[in-house]
Image (cartoon, rainbow over all chains, first blue to last red; front, side, top):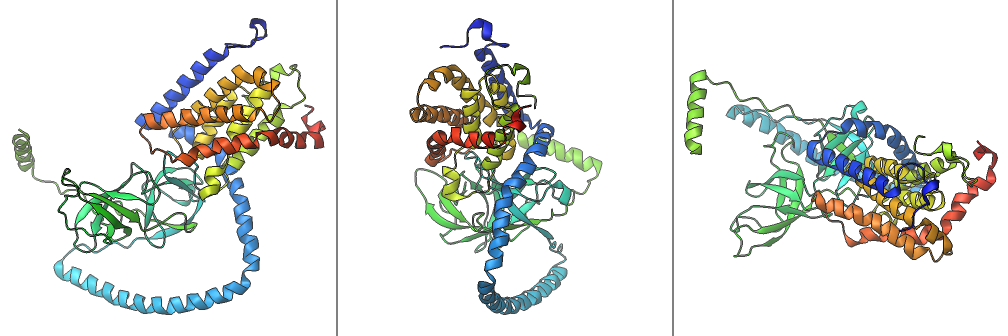
Length: 300
Length: 173
């Protein structure tokens, strides 16, 4: 190893510096992944990086504007197409309104909680990070436009992911295909509930821990079940694509294709957070103590 | 900027510290361009390339400290684990500092394979840290960025010198 001669050196030698920076970055990594300590430092650096990100997004925006000038001819076609679509959608919408009214009535009859209406705001995908270790996208709405942690992001066909990190002007969405992301789902066909998890590859989800004899077929649609209090119920998540049941394992290996895709369109919807789940009603003190006793016995 | 050592200005060079900072910022913007699909996997890591260029050609100015800070910026921009890019850039910069005399002997075209190895070393560090925290394993085309980066290497001296020729006075400070 050749390094600079002793009397030309400034400060500590390269190896010492490497050890210092390596330890520092390892410390940062551990603090970030294990203890989630560093949002403030990240926020500070994002003050520098976010404007640059906006700047990098400018060419795409300019391209959109300029190409917008040239598409007036195809716009006529698009408008006629959209009018047709609008008419057919209108019919379905009327049907839906009738169904909704009926649903409200039936729910009233059964004395059930009314379904919550979910508000939404549109956002644009600013940037797809070139990080092969996670599946994330960056949106152009941040805490200044009222975005909150944990909000659900959807496109026109289904769930995309959930907001996991917030900056003043931007937010990061962890996609449902990310390895650590799971969504509680329900089969439309028979109401079977389960969890669908990403495996870290684009376009593949996995339905884990379903018994090999579970009633599931390829082509089944999975929608959010809504029992988690995060995802509103009924949003399409994925369709089952392949089922491998091996007698050697007690669980079937079920792969699914996500319904929504980030690569298709840039506009997405951020759904407003659901109202918090009502807390468990307080029980009389004696009952709680009895419950505790029962719990202890049950544990033993 | 704190990471450019302006006190060591007497070192034999005509490159202004501001210019180095500017070039790194431009590289950062290039890295943050919204690309998708094959363009995204072929896009070289411009920040790594520039950090490498300056640590080979201006080792007094750009060293591990600057690489570390650029890495932190990339970590925030790329939404990756905090410190992952920082570690990989510092390691790459360290190897470059050890090798910079030997590298400068070769012609710019003969430097390509060695630069590819240097860029690869940075990516391998990222891969190792990714495995350690049990993140998604990237697909193989993740490594293409090193190759495309190394192929861009011969253009870098010209690209870097263009703005210097046009406005020599702005760097005089």
